[in-house]
Length: 208
Ligand code: T5A
Image (cartoon, rainbow, N blue to C red; front, side, top):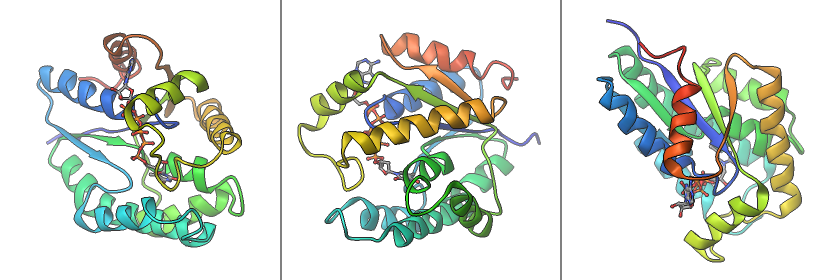
């Protein structure tokens, strides 16, 4: 049996990751592939419980170190219980966010990128996606999409200020330039169907 592929969708708030994950899964199934759709934080029973701890409550509920450890712990459970078993049975796994979100959101302040990678080595044996697709959307358009959906109701981390979200966007751009074979930036503007076509294009070399 051929091992499946592990694909992650990344990007800032409101870029369209969840919408595209569903569309991409449908497009891959139409090609005869078995697909598992999952998300972070979450994606396994234990990790979904940790998601509740991470995304609710006051902005200062967790210190930066505790927050990074909780994301790494959730990811360890997700990799072990959901992602690896699905890949081993030949399915493709699509995850709405993964390690690069921790690098972009937790690895740019009190902790460094190296610290986040160390936590990932301990938690998940350094397991990496076969391809990471970063959805890039102009800041104003992403905010309009998120606001149209949620109004002023952002979660603990999404509610941080614009300067923080700009740093996150610059981190994703840096990952794409540093690891071009794994990380591809995809234009997320315009019609959802056109975005899905761009994502499929960016997976072209991995498709059977
Ligand atoms: N986090 C996560 C960390 O800090 N560290 C980590 O390690 C991890 C894993 C997760 C939060 O946790 C942080 C990052 C986040 O702050 P979440 O609730 O899972 O939070 O939410 P996000 O991942 O941020 O995603 P969002 O739900 O905000 O947005 P999406 O999924 O990017 O966008 P989506 O698909 O929901 O679309 C947003 C709106 O736009 C519309 C949709 O219908 C929806 O209403 N839309 C479009 N409109 C016009 N044209 C298109 N092409 C459209 N595509 C979608």
